[in-house]
Image 1 (cartoon, rainbow, N blue to C red):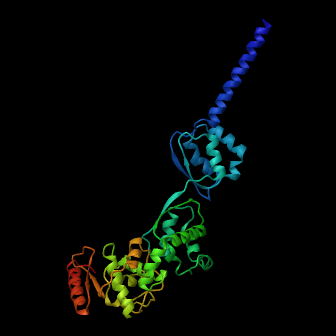
Image 2 (cartoon, rainbow, N blue to C red):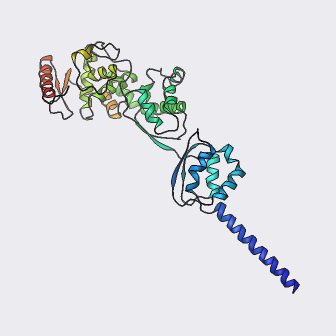
Image 3 (tube, rainbow, N blue to C red):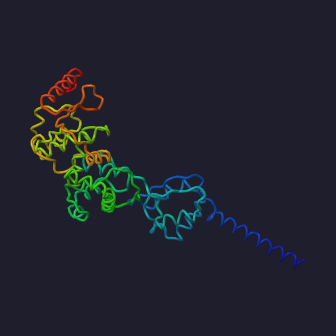
Length: 337
């Protein structure tokens, strides 16, 4: 009987140990994530903030805390954007946070007029704040590292959607955008650029004016051609968007005579040639429109009074004045001031 009792105790212990091992396996290496979700851990976040965000998303929380202590996760976790995928275990989640195995985020860069707007747009999509981005965009040292200066650095950015790690440092982003700029300027684009006689910076600056003049891609090459004609003939560009930029009044709906005298190197009514740098971040369609500018003899254009987004073009001042009067009359009729 004693032998049977001893055997029973041993068997019970084995079963309990096996059960404990099974439970431990499930707790640590079984599925802890039921539903996929995104986890953002800022570089400023404490470990407490991390666990507050993480715990509602996983099961086996006691096992996670135990394993996290074993990994010294409190002192070694990496900030970033993480994707908790369905079926991940406690071990996989903890190791992901310790090793910084981030999932990149898609960042869209477009439709901004000034570096401050770009900084704000990036700050809404990445971990760094707008102040940090502005420090990078105005850094003479950083601009020199990528072959620009702090005034023209803005012209380096090519609008598109890019993948970055959420915790990318602003200086790293600037260097990445330099590589994207180099990729954009293919041998084919540079060959077209030489036809215009413009530098890359001048192409970007003219494209920014074209982009502000119209959103009609099919008309952009013709407008670019007008400005190329003016540059070649030494005629001031007299581009209304440069006045808005000079005044930093982008909501101005009607350019009046008093606005044309606003003192600024960006005001192309009082300064010949192109302004010192782009007045916005032009779309790729506008950049390519400048490279593929239309050959013609127009030197004027004016918005159509139909307000359809297109323009009437003219070869002579007399024709242009007639177009301008028709547009002005429609502005008056619509009480646009």
